[in-house]
Amino acid sequence: MSTEIVKALDFYILAIDFVSLLMTFPGYMFIIVVNILDWMKNKRLDISDQLICGLGLLSLIHRITQVSVVCIILIYGLNEITYFTWISMHLMHYSINLCTLLFSTWLSIHFCLKIVNINHNLYINIQNWFPQMFPWIHFLSVLTSLLISGPAAQDVSGIISNSIIFLNISSSPLKIFLSSKLYYVFSAIFFLIFVIMVLVTIVSLYRHIKLMQNNTNHFRAETIEVPVNAVKTLIFLICLNLLHFILPIVTMFVRNHLQLVVLIFAILHSLDLPILIRGSTKLKKKLNELWLYLISLAS
Image (cartoon, rainbow, N blue to C red; front, side):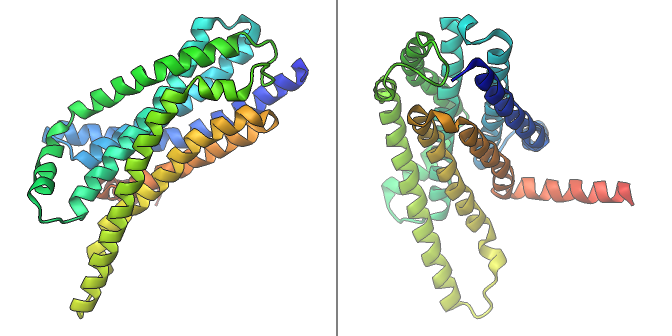
């Protein structure tokens, strides 16, 4: 692949990432600022709000990182990028994706413990114990992501930095994947937990809705709106995390469609915003208040 084509692709990818960042930046900042103000006012923050805020922050960092990486490549060129720079970029990429998965898993466990009712001492103890893990679980999740991502970033960076032509790596894609096997095995375990928690929550919620419909003459959809929105948020996060790990593997084998992968990521993060906001009653309320305020200013 010629240098001119590579640069054209880099500019195309940069344009996609930059537009995506401009579109999502206000929304992610809205999530972060609303939760910070709420914490400053009440000196506490609900667990779901903590995790949704964390997911919003991680998505924002992901968008900024994507733009920064392409800018570095365009400014300095691939041949001038040092091994340390490659490690830094890959460490940021791997750790953000893994931390997003961990936060999503904790959110699924939190919603499962709130929605699913099991009259057993162990389950009741877990319900009481889980909230006590916060906010320390955020620090542990970030630390674990860095520790697990470090070896993978180091191995992959060694392979990439020894390549001469970008997106046409001489090393086998299978070798790149195997160098990150610990990272993917750890991710697969937490993804499995994530999916199981979501499935248990969906089954329990479905049974609860059917029971309410059979036993209540005046069933109202508003009564189950919050848990249904929570499940919708979790289902989208499953798709987001799955693509976070599948698409990079696909690009190892199909190098000519990198711009399509970047476009898919940009679209996903654009859809990520309304899903995260719908998963929080507080954010929905604040967004409606902001919308009404803007309309009053315009009128």
